[in-house]
Image (cartoon, rainbow, N blue to C red):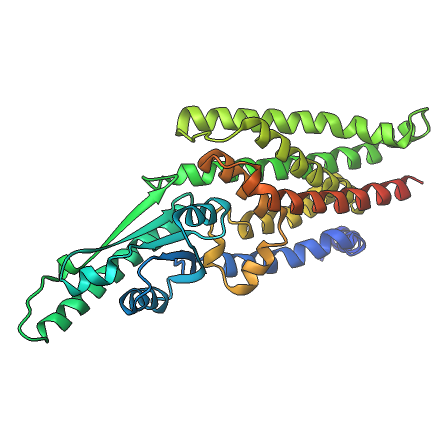
Length: 376
């Protein structure tokens, strides 16, 4: 065999072995992707969080609620005392479905009059909403048939199955269950995360490669001035991207902007700063721009698939749902969809703000300390 060819092949293997970060990412990334897709991709959503306002509090209403839970599509997480509490739970994301049973539910069934049940569905996620609507409708029809059979088995009482139980489903925030209204706010969050993490990491590593970073270090600039000068332009660019995406989404896909834009931009700053801090940390790990991009995707891809951007968190297994709570993008998407689609304010979004703030403070502080140590 050509000795020159063997020589160049041996040289490449040696170089790859020395580049341990790239080698680890190459070997680990496919396994990570398979695992993430395996737990994230699930179009059959079950155990949807449900809040109930049972005004009847009778055996008949309890049997209907048991039928909901036995279907495995609904998981009753809370009982409300009024409609306002049901609305608040759905607005803050504590429940995706609200079930309202009127006080005359049992009396209407015994009198063979139509007994109505209202099912309110948060349709900001069309996949979850479709599962909930179809399941509630099917359960209502099945329960009506059971009641009709019981009546026919009685003392000659005749009843039509369609007249006994009337389950009326209402889809809030996205009545037509259009996918763009769900996807586009998520893409805005993903775009901000990717650009802030990848760009700042690549820029800092590029300057290390070219030697310009060392020139800045020995200049009269203080460390905090150097960091601020690098971060502020990236924050401005992130806001420009966000604004452009919001305008396009509103003009071409009719994505509503029901909430306060000032609040959205203020809360976005917390997420952007945390992402920039992660980008700084990646720049301290990478030796080349290629490595910086690879490491950024290592953080970026799990956030995309496990945050609820494309696939509902409710459809993931327990381990997937647990990992979703460690993704900053999960909470930022709740802020985006809450303000844009639901029109809610800080009274409902403060838990997400606290989590993002804690993440930003910890990550940004550790990243800056590590960056300064590497510079020293």
